[in-house]
Amino acid sequence: MRSLFAVIKRVAIILLQLLVTGAGIFYVFHDTAKRAQVGRALREADWRWLLLGWLIYGIVELLATVRWKLLLRVQGIAIGWVRAGVIVVIGLFFNMILPGLVGGDAARLYLVFQQSRSRKTRATLSVAMDRMLGLFSLLFLAVLVVLLRLRWLQQFPQTARVTYVALALLAGVSLFVLFLLGAIGFRQVPKLPRRLPFRKQIVETGKALHLYRAQPATIAIVFLLTIFSHLAYYMSYYCAMRSLGAPGVHVARVVDVLSIMPLVNTITGVPISFGGVGVRETLFQTLFGKLANVPVALAALSASLGYLIQASWGVIGGTAYLMIFQKGKRKRAFVVAEGRARF
Image (cartoon, rainbow, N blue to C red; front, side, top):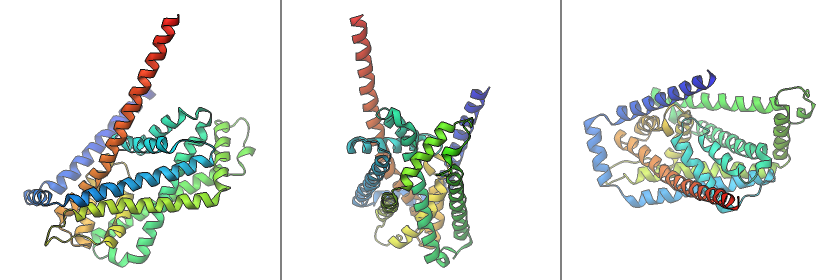
């Protein structure tokens, strides 16, 4: 019964995401005039800006690899640079094709468990810490934007509402994470009753968290790397928008992109559509259209192009996964055949 309920729940989530994604795309691009404008913009696009955006997004994945390597090293887990980078882009691929927020994390853990089976808890915590630092760095950037440009964001009722929703989401999730960290109680974990369910796993998590607590310099470096990773991600979308900046077409300034993207990132992080598609285009149309005077069709199109830049790196991750999977499959088949032959 439970398995049936889980299947129904997963199907319902997928259907909801499909509905939201389709509704968002239809809302943004259903107008004939907008589609004509989009077609003209694509024909006149400067593909050099898209190439630059693609290279800049590569920096996002490079920084993600470096910070995860640092987090793994604290836990005593050694993975080569190339393998870590491949696992990171594979995680990106699964984040894009699976519903929810943890598909890529599960893929990362599956691949790292193959090398560190005895330290599954610590490997899991490295991914969780990566997520937490990403959340807190996003909260930092969003608060910084609000402090510096709140009046600009409040110019229109629609943009003000988006700002408040994003801040509420960030604050709520951050408080929840802090509550969980406090509930674990770094130093009190070993004192938990021995009959407590999952006590061993909780104790191991507490010990692993204590390792991070004992190395604040490493955590500070990882936090800064995460900040730079966010900024590089935002700049890839700026390049996508600049590629549509034909003569006479207004595009947003860098400061406007850096101010709006933390809000967009926060809302699209809620898994109500596939990869934020549909929701992101709607937010771009509203925020960049009103605050930066970007034509709404081009604003929505730049959201789609920015996501395609990211998706292209996901395709690289998917290709890498298939190569690794097929290699492992052939290796297992060879071992089985060799065993039968000996028998």
